[in-house]
Each structure stands twice: as structure tokens, then as C-alpha cells.
Amino acid sequence: MTTLFVNRLTVIDNSILSPARGLVGESWQVDIELDGDLDYQGMVLDFGEVKRSIKRMIDQQFDHKLLVPADYPALQIAEYPEGLHLSFKLEDGLQIEHRSPRDAIRLIPCERIAADRLAQIIADYLSPLTPENVSAVRVRLWPEQRDGVFYHYSHGLKQHAGNCQRIAHGHRSRLEILRNGQRDNALEDAWAARWTDIYIGTRADVIGVSRRDGVEYYEFGYRSAQGNFGLTLARAACYLLDSESTVENIAQHIADQLKAAHPGDRFKVYAYEGVDKGAIGIA
View 1 (spheres, rainbow, N blue to C red):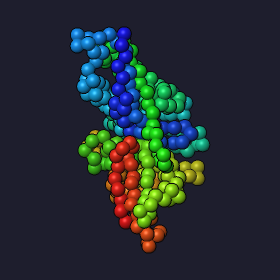
View 2 (view 1 turned 90 degrees about the vertical axis):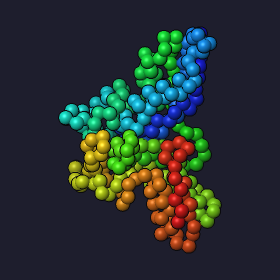
View 3 (view 1 turned 30 degrees about the horizontal axis):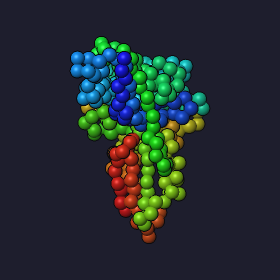
């Protein structure tokens, strides 16, 4: 038996429902190992096939989705003609509601979603779909490991032609701020703290404001190419932009806010969207 491995086969960007933290954007790099006998080519599986078909299966089933701990006791799921309606009560009593087509959600059989559990779920999904000579599949998920600050954010882009239109998908993202050409760690820390586990929403997508047990909630909603989407979150967990919450607009928003607070300085903001991609805002 031989083991084939591919490191960083793909990156899955998604949001999870966390009993402790609420709606959390995540970005995981995916490593994979395949045990098996050699085929007629002298291979366990051609690298091109791993990068093409296995990567595609992972991306289709787990990327840009809301991952939901299906066994969490304070989760309620209701079906409606276009999809699923989720009600999720956090440990602190706050509520999250999510409405979307089924393809925007992946139910994970657990009470709390963790990287090792999700990795096993992915491996179990892939195993029966691999060639007969492959006897075992192992998956490892791990976050980007670099110096500097990062923040977890979720968002939805209703104008997007692809899966970014899903109202609650997210990213674990780095942030770099240059002030007059030099990194400003204090400003980076301040923005990362402000956007800890944040939902960056578009002001025009707020369709209502409600109050429950003394807590104010934003109600987001829109229709996109994939269907109707809705999300209800505590106002304190949201940050509103006047534009679509693309990474380009996020980077420019931070730069403009910094310039307004420090008009005598020049700013260059590197806002990441997950791993190794993002946008630059200048003010």
C-alpha cells in the first residue's frame, strides 16, 4: 500500500453557527492523503485527477456554505417550499435566524463544529467516491499561519453570479494597515478587535429592525439568482456598509475611515478575503 498526499489542495471559505460565538466566518486550508494500491499507471491516483475531481467535490459540498451543527439542542429546522429556515439560540440567549435554499447550508452531525470533526466528515464523504484501488482517505483542515492580526467575518453579495450571493458565508482574514508607508500595528489591532466575529452587511439589505428580550436585531433579506435569503442577527454583531460588502469595498472603507480620523496621514490597507487574496484600499 502507498500513500499519496496533496497539501493545500484547496481552501474552503464558509461560516459556521457556534453556540459560544454566533455566526463565525472561517477559512480552512485542506490537506489530503490517499492510501491505496498502485493502478496500471503505477499511481494511487493521478495528481491531476486529485486536483480536478476531488477538489471540485470538496468545493461543491463544503465551500461558501453555512455549516450548521445538526445535533445542537437549541437548533430548530423548518422546511418551506424554497429551502430551510433555521433558528439557533446561543449560549448567551441571543438568537440567529437564517433562511435560504438548501444548497446554501450543510448540516454537520455534531453539537459543535471543529476542524477535526469537519475534516472527518469530508473524508467520509469522499471515501466512497474515490477509485476502487483507494482504501482510505484522510483530510486535515488548518488555518493560515502567519504573523499579524486577523478577523472572522461573514457576508453575502446578492449581485454575485456565484456562491458569494449566499447570505451567510465567510472568511478568516488578515489585515495590514500602512500609515505613511509603515505598518501600524495598533490600528490593525483596533480594526481586528472591532470586527471579531462580525457580519458585514449592506445597509440596503436591512429589511427590518426588531427587539427581543431587550436586544435589538437587524433583519437582512434579499432575492438573488439562487433564491430568497434571510438572516436575523443581533445588531451588536453587525457592521453596515453603504455599498456591497465586497473585499474591494471593505478595503476602501477602512482606508476612508482612517483618513477621516487622521486627515494628515496617508493610508494603504490590505484587506484579505480568506487566504492569499484580497484588495487594497488607498486614502
